Image 1 (cartoon, rainbow, N blue to C red):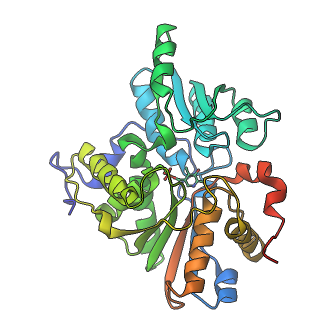
Image 2 (image 1 turned 90 degrees about the vertical axis):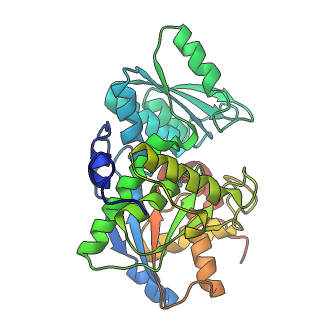
Image 3 (image 1 turned 180 degrees about the vertical axis):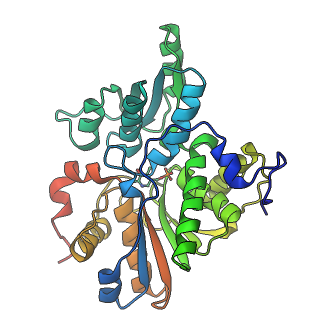
Length: 345
Ligand SMILES: *Cc1c(COP(=O)(O)O)cnc(C)c1O
């Protein structure tokens, strides 16, 4: 267990509050019931945590990580944020916005060929003034170290943010988010049976896993794996290791284990970024029942998995389940017609 006081005599919350942090978000994000959809399903009782409304440049989970990453970059005297992702990376778009909001330059390494039309997140990257390097076949930051070297040789001071912002610095954003949820649950006298979230680079889940020990709230963490780059079974172990490195960096003892969460690895469809009927139907369902938008790559897959597990009976109709919406709205636009067609009917 994480002690309520770190060796320096600080509570977990005080240790977090002592980290360098650049405010980029409007917090807390809403915690709201999905009453119409829950009634239509006949249970479970579904709730949503609206991190699609974090406030920076159409929102999303990366903004919470970037508060600490940009805080560290500014504290270290850097002048440029350097990161990488897929062409429609929400992480890169939020990094470009965070740089603009903080007086920093931004260099992005995006996977693929430069598209003819700047759409969705690419359009926004451009509007925020990011310098974009296109790299076919590499979207996980493979070129970051070499590019950082080149920028430094040009006299710039790049701060390298790994793929997805998922290191000990970025994961602190979701430790703080865990504290936020714990206090919202306490004031509403709410308990959850499960907490569903999409997971890819793992920083969001790592912060929540560590945060659940530090701030003690109910709900088994249930992550839906979005991207099958890593061998099956290893995602939970990597996430637990990051959770423990993150809390150790704050002076707490880390003891989170992979078994403390469920990682659903069987909803990968036809691959990363490919919309199938699971994603399309989840987007339409939530949009039509609640007026809430999911994104085609991450949250549609995670919410679609949640609906499938309810349908299969793996989640009881009497449970109360929180879905953590992690954002991604701008990616809806480049997917256009793929979101409307319905091959299953
Ligand atoms: C990046 C992202 C995720 C995954 O978060 P990780 O911390 O990388 O696991 C989920 N949803 C959206 C919309 C994202 O952009």
